[in-house]
Image (cartoon, rainbow, N blue to C red; front, side, top):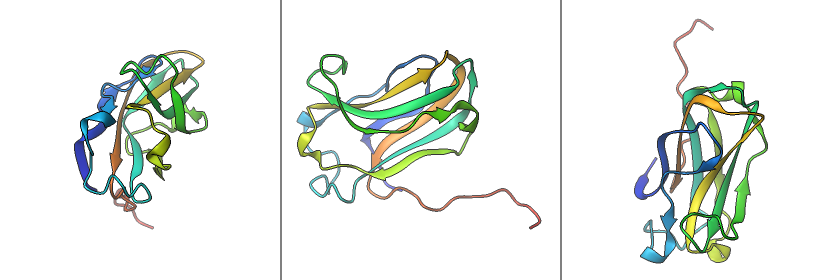
Length: 145
């Protein structure tokens, strides 16, 4: 998988409360990836790197854009997951791996919003990025089948 550091929203970001990603991408700073114009090949990939622990029952992830970097004036939701059961969020769990919608409706600043449902998290880390080729290969532990 090819990751452009300018297109990363979160790198092992600890999520303990509802909020936005540690990085917000500025689309006004120029193209992020060499094929940025070909949105059909760009994908959003979010993975869990540390098990989610706490009183939250579910976590929802959304890709949002806004005219301000804080994503708090009039954010536009472009992609959103269903509420994902917290107990499923273990290391290696793929939250979402999906093509981006056409980027013509995106505002200048783009980020990920982590929404906790039913409480807070005391642990849980996530990676999130726009990638050219999200991995479809998955490593499994050695086992006798």
